[in-house]
Amino acid sequence: MYFAYMRKLYFTLTIAAHFIISNNCAQPTTDTLLSKILSTSSNSITKSIVADPLKYRCQIIYTQINRNSKGIPTFKNYYFNNHAALYFNPASMVKMPLAFLSLEKIKEIKVKGINKFTGMQFDSSYEQQVAMKIDTTAKNKLPSIAHFIKRALLISENDPYNRMYQFVGQEAINHKLHQKGYTTARITRQFMGYSEEQNRHTNGIQFINGKQEVVYQQPPAYNKEAFDFSQNIKVGKAHWDRNDSLIQEPFDFTKHNHVALQDFQQMLQSVLFPASVPSHQRFNLTDDDRLFLLKYLSQYPSETDYPKYDTTLFYDSYVKFFFRDSTNKIPPYIRIFNKVGWAYGFSTDVSYIVDTKNNIDYMLSATIYVNSDEVVNDSKYDYETVGQPFMHDIGQLIYQFELNRKHDFKPKLNAFNIQYDKRDINDKRPMIQLVDN
Image 1: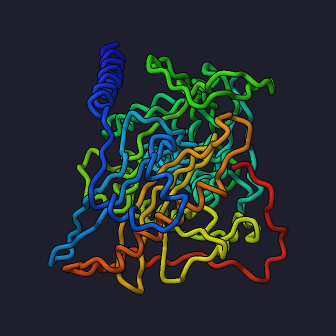
Image 2: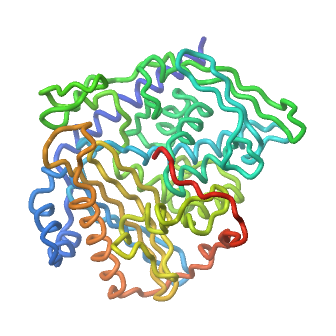
C-alpha cells in the first residue's frame, strides 16, 4: 500500500509540475540568431510562416554542437517560437520514446534468453484487442522488440508502436518519462481507434524461444492512474467525427498524446550523447541497444532486407523531412538520425545531422500545422504544398549556416560511422507496398 501511495503521489506531483512549467512558459521563446537565419530565406512559404508562427503553430529548435580541445561536446539550443504550452499533435513522434522504453524494459526483465530479438506473442485480453502471433515482415516470422523498432523507425509503421505500448504499459510509459524529467509527456493512446478505457488495458504477452517454448509471461495490465485533462485543447473550426459526420466545432485534442518539442529533442540527445544530459534523463540501455537504435534511426529503407519495403514508395528521404526534396535523395556523406510524425495537419521532425565530408554535426527540431481549410480529420492537409517545402527550406538554411560557421575544434565522428545493412539484390521476395503509417 505504501509503495502504491508513493507512486500515486509522485505521479500527481509530476503532473502538477508540468502545468506549473507550462504556465511559466506562457510566452514563446525566440532567439535572435535563429530569427536572423530564417530571415535569409527567399522561399515565400517560409517567409509567410515566419511572419505568423502562431497561425501555423510553428516551433523550431536549432542545437549547435561545439567541442573543446579534448573533443567533449557542449550543446546550445536556439529557439523560434518555442512554447511548451502550444499544443501540436506528436503523431508518430511518440514511437521514438516507446522504442527507448521498450529496450529499457527488456534489459530490466533479467530473464535468461530474453533480449530484443526474442520472439513474442500477444494475446487478446480485453475487448477490441488484437492478438499477434506472427510477423510476416521478419526473417523468422516472429514479432520481437527489435523488429518493432526497425519498422517504427525505418518508415514509421503504426502497429509496432501499438505493440511497444502494450509491452511497456500505459502507466509505466508515463511514470518512466516523468521520472526522467520529460514532464510534458502524456502518452494515452494507441493508434487503434480505442476508447479512453480500452487504451488503459494492455495485452498479455508471451516470450518464446526457438523451440516455441514459453520462457516468460507478462500478464495483461491496467492503468488505474488518472490523467489531468483539465486543460482543454481544441484546434480548427470544424471536424469530421468517427461517424463521418461534419461537426461545425473545433477538434478536441484534450485527451490525445502530447509531448513538448524540447522534450523530444532532449530524448534524442540523451541517446545520441548520453553524457551530455543529467543521468536521470538517460534511458537505461546496453551499449549494443544504443548502437542498434543509432543504426535504425539513420538507416534507409533501400538498405533493409527485413522488412523489404518498395523503395519507389519508401525512398531514402521518405522520413527525413529536412533533406527531402524532389530528387528524394540524400548525399552519401550525410546521415540523419531522426524521427518524424505527421497527422491531423501537424508535421514534426527531430533530427541529428552528420556530414562526414565537411565534418559538421548539429541538431534541428521543428513542428508545423498546415491545414488551410481549418477542417480537422478530413485527410485534406497541406503537407506537400506547405509543410514539406517549409521543412526542407529550413533544413537547408541551417545546413548552409553550419557549413559556414566557424568551429574552433572539428568533431571526430567515428562513433557515428555505422555499418548499415545491405539489401540482397538476388532476393526475389515481393516488396512491401501497403503499410499503415
